[in-house]
Length: 260
Image (tube, rainbow, N blue to C red; front, side, top):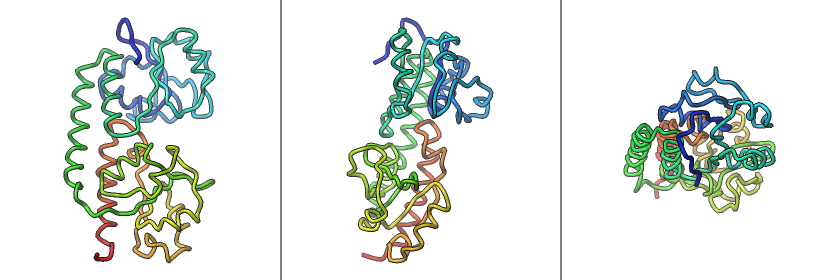
């Protein structure tokens, strides 16, 4: 656990979803730099950039004299982060795997930024939204679901990904939940063998690709659905909106399943 002697007044954020969280809890004025793709809320687009997914500038970060750096567990840059740690700069590593983790992260960032009240309110609202969805779909008929997150090569998600927790929340059954890593590389043959009844993807062309296998249940049923990328792929405050949309998509697919 990261501890600070006083709330961080200068925060560098190396992951877009944490930017959204800090804005939501009332810590926007304490953010001094972000990375590319930190585009929500719109005001975040005006913040200085210190890198992107492909690399970060250690020199630029150090010039800003941060009192806290927020990074992503799976975001790369291990050498730069190790250097920051060696220099004594506090690091908070974001690694949410489910809805409960995201709410905990809101509270943790509230503690580190001195915005405990805003964080507590945001986390409670977030948890209540998900509790309502969980209650609504608790007894829903399972829908075998394949979530595609890339196509060159083909990737999906496992139970170690927060996206899997959303699929399960909505009554879906992730066909690659048993994979050993959060984002497993899979083959077309493996997808065909697991016979998903619903395919979810972030691009229309990815969905169109599966039309060449009309024997696949998802294709035969017409259950090919486009995901709302930012609200479903970023584990932050907007995830509740994305989850509601995902539940509607899974429920629509459920209605097309054959009786039995």
